[in-house]
Image 1: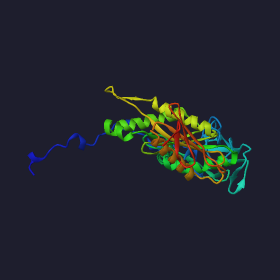
Image 2: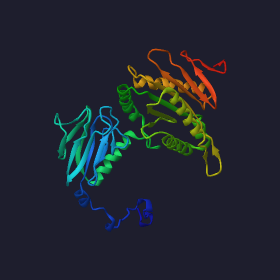
Image 3: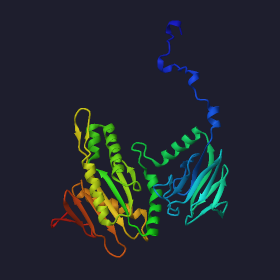
Image 4: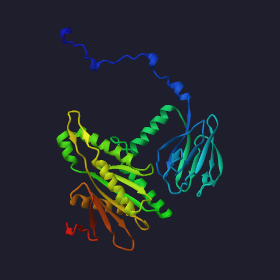
Length: 343
């Protein structure tokens, strides 16, 4: 090859020389160890719980706790962790129902050393670790990638499968109703086809944000797949669940999206909900199946509506729904009746 044939590499092939004064000193970062717990067993495996040197950290089921763990064996305020010295913390049981255990023995207080594993209740295991900032961020990103939908930021289907069993157990124990609501955006494929997938993604993101803003902190929003979302909510009676579904439907209908070129995209949703007041003998698969069946009935009824039902162990379910002020009734055979007409 002649000298004339040789070409200078373009900018994409050049290695950028960085200013060494702006580089991170890894040895210095590694010296700055931060204390945290890593969940090793139970719900939220892999989650990091950083600890504070300034104020106590509370672990429990209560939304007001520093770290909330949705395990029915965890008390509302289960344990408190306080700073004692660099790398040293004390964990104290807050008179929890199911206790705190170290090396198989129930304890009320324990001075933590690196690597100590603490059992809270019957299945939640937390490990005390000292990590630098890079390790903390790495473990956080790994955990988030396993339980969060990367597009919308809400929980994903895997987290639902783990979470629903704990919610049913809690509902049985405390005698609370539990509702699953399945939401499907109407004609979403048409939005992708007419406006492009990037616009479709923005619709999903806005829908997720709208759902989060419409619900309580203790309610769970999941992107179940594609344009389908699931809501899990506890403590609401069947008539309240139907009203919640209608409020969610109206909120989605009102969130029309405007494109830069001036076009307005109207968004509606069909919703299928099911509530179980006595979850004895009921599992998550049945709740999901019946909410999906109600979603299908909502689509058959013309979309942009809610079909809600109640599971009763002793009698056939009664199902009612509202769409723009009209009442739908669904009998135990699945027949939809409205204003004397059957569909």
